Image (cartoon, each protein chain N blue to C red):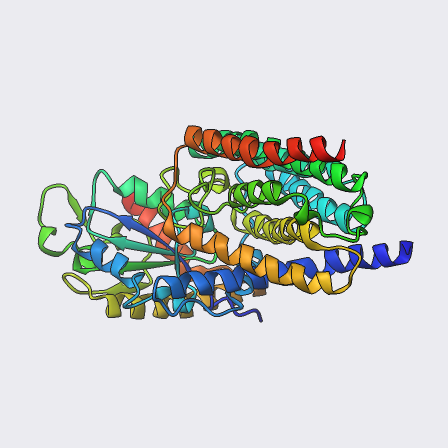
Length: 161
Length: 290
């Protein structure tokens, strides 16, 4: 079985974040934390990304964008919700335009809570995501469908309707 | 002698990806050290390639697969021809053909970012092509042949006659190797204003093929640098390796210390350097040799 755990490419999408978490995501790439040690690259391209990093809550405007970004990514893929807003909606949860956390539109694999999430926690979340990433590849190569993934997608679709 | 050429060409086809990947890994490590980071492992480019090839193949247009395979094929052919000792001018034309296939792979998708990146790729060609042609002409003036097998045979290294051309070639090497400040058509860094430019719409597996082609191209381009140094003395090969290492280090230093420029600045500067350094060098050469 091929190990793909050494090269997770991350795409960062800012939902409706206050930019606190975004600054922390960028901090992960600075010399202090140096996420590239683990082969983590911040790419801007969904077609080449493995891990979707979402910060901020999901609102009516960005829900289709998040969904499209997720759909454009090739399997196996992993979603990491960074910060309490991306996990549940956070302090904005009851706002009229907020749908909630990232799991309202796409299946989320790893939740990294915090306001703002610390760089250590973000890197830890990504490393946890890498484990899921490898599992997905093994399932894919065995020809099994990525069931939990698909089920979550279906629920998301039915919710859309 | 023919078998020797054939062996070197076969070695190129087999080992260029290994060398190219290692060079890429060393480059990333040095870059990281320059930024006071630990940096990825030396073999990171190979891990990346392995992962890209294991992902679900996604393509925006089916013809992309054909274009990307053609891109790889022609890049391999370019280097293969050079290591076979064939016409260097022909190598450069085949290289241009390869770039055209990359251009098609980008514009066939209909994405704006991809299209902008592709048109910038053509501007890059406009910027470096005069210098490439002048380099070939300069080699002809010195050795009386376009064939790489003849170019490496002289008693004195061509760089002695062609210091200006060498400077101009190193300058356009920055464009060709997609290093900052001339990484305008695509970028290895996430700070790209047009997403990933020409590679925006290239899916994981095709991006793996693109990476592989880049490694072949790196080895070919550094081989071009070696042509300036190598002469009939076998020790000159060692000198060429040292010069290649220095040139590559210089490219990384430039990459880390300069910001991306606009395309018009790129064309003006690269043409100016080509005309002044390479053009003047060739004029002097014609005056003395002719």
